[in-house]
Image (tube, rainbow, N blue to C red):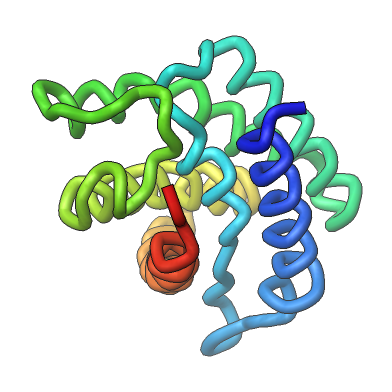
Length: 171
């Protein structure tokens, strides 16, 4: 197995374990939850075929839903993000000189583009996740508040992980 795949699998194990042990127990102000596992979809190289990305998202969502007993909301939100990811990548990275075979990171793509990409993907993921969780558009202000605040917390944590990962990269 290739070194990059081993590194990704190890990183996946760490992130899912942290989500399970630590971040699922974080509940700022009673309703703000960071969902950092989305970083596993965020960092995958642009060159991955969409059907593989959707399969990875499905399996990851299935694993998370079975661990967290969440009836498919993680699976649906991850598959949706995987399906929209190429569109987001084209919009954000179009015309930029970047290596599509490398992991998407601050080091490989620059801080501003990476932050814009992370923010977009996290808001899409959290919006879908929270709307499905509530399944009630009567509470639209609560859905919007929870989406925005949970996204901000998740983005900050993901960016911290990304900085640490950038410092540890020795390409």
